[in-house]
Length: 178
Image: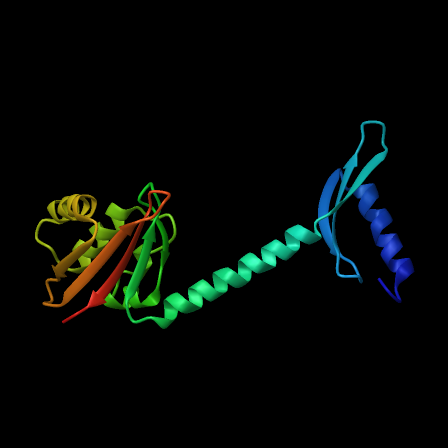
């Protein structure tokens, strides 16, 4: 707005006239952030609230940096890494895991169910009895946890180390030992 104050004021007045309600965030020159909420009242007036969200913005930035660092670390390792939540829905998977199972990347998205991911894997791996394969994988996963050695139909061998997280999810590291 510096240098264009009249235009800025004009746009704000117009925004107030047209908007029924509106919420936006604005960074200030001193580094603070405000969330500005406007609500048109029944009598035609305007209620405007200003909330300092500087701390929230700072935490969002820290979270974004931590997520970026975690993703960088997971992409730097050679092992496949995959996380499922307590409801057996995919949360995170790295590219090394996807490379171990060519053609599976279209099935590996956040929210995908464990059994659907392994059903697609059984199809790609050309298993004879897909549903039996999925059932066996689910049973094996819940019964064993820990460490498993698996052989794919193509002859490759993988060591799978799985652990339960505090929230009931499952974290698995896949290592190709062919």
